[in-house]
Image 1 (cartoon, rainbow, N blue to C red):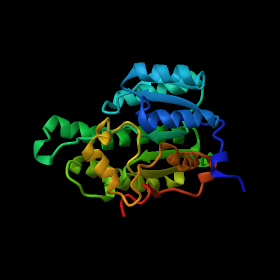
Image 2: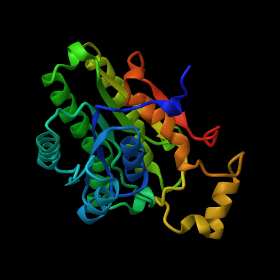
Image 3: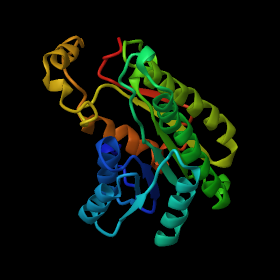
Length: 256
């Protein structure tokens, strides 16, 4: 039996949001190495330009703001025009954290957090599904959508109320979309990583409070970003035909 690490994504066209850094940039490298063509969507165009230069002709950099529905549609249009194929794989990864006490979060920050983490993911998945259905996913059964959630969806902690709530909503959104599109040949799954060293925390993990935070985990470590590769690659592949509506925790037991 072939290893999950041997899974190929040849022939797939994936659109990844939040591709300028962290998980998004990492998944882009993994997908291209596995044979996929990738549209790199992010607000920071200069960063996806640099990433596309690194990855070569299999990657297309796109300015994409998931808070703007029209920006999402334009990104899908550009990807399909450039590669001459329909997007059949979506990784809805863009996210932002509030990082403040609930009493200190201003209205604009609250709206932006929900717009990026939840509404943006919905718009991205919805546009992807529209393209997949139009391209015949009901017959091919090759539509794949992966929503990147967070283990904070299962936790309660100060400073995370809005972010964690938005990620809990992502988990439920994924299951609902999976049911709605199950007969359209589109699989929707949610991956909930734990605390991973992606740069998302900035330099905070190097501070004494940051070190204490990590030491509070039973295994006293962060999840290496590469640990998430096999499951995301599997969910994007033809091999995952019979897996939809799943919520997968990848947190090294941090939530226990």
